[in-house]
Image (tube, helix red, strand yellow):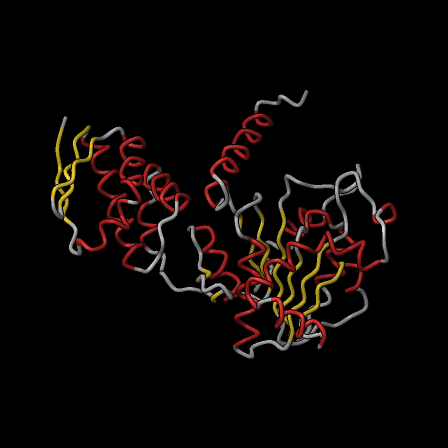
Length: 321
């Protein structure tokens, strides 16, 4: 057994670093099998040398995040501990604390993982970005945040969000109501993100003026989309023809973000996913980037990560029965 003592330069930050009832310290002890003891502005760490260094690195990373103004949620702490465990502490340390925009409730929207930071940087740098990964990685929400920021900075004149109206076991014809009421449930996640950024009143006003457009993918056919930030969500449910049609709508001074999860394809059997094909076709085209998320980038409940891992392991082992 070995020991190490680390000191915090600003003791006032320690409550935020340690968490309510020292829950963050308890998480570090469980993750690295060490014992932490606090006295004044010092934390004494006891355990195996390698695990002590990991615990020390995790505490320093949490301290950095607090200094950058981030609120340490359970998910944030879990992510930091996982990255340190995998030897990727430097990647987390290089993340800046800059926010993208602020929601109407005062929450600062910012990348929470290294994968999200790469995604945000890619969108800022490239005209077209494909964000591919599991549910809960913030693909759509971050894209909407960047669209809102670009609109408020007068970099684009409108925001267009679209989805293919395809779901497992359902068809639009079986749903009640007119066309708008039929497609609204498919577009609800996009509405929710815009409500967060603009507020219901401003969102409604922009919708009335056609500054914000939320519509099924079929509505994009035959158009040229100039001066717009365009987001195609759930792109794994597009056909090859649909995604090609969408990509060729790109007009002057516009930006496109295409998001999807290739493990959740709801197309009829024998239909190829346009997203999978586009990733192959466009991988060498300049000014187009593809960012792949993993379960580490999931920012929802811890169980979402566990569910994704469980399914990955299940199919890797070939247990499809």
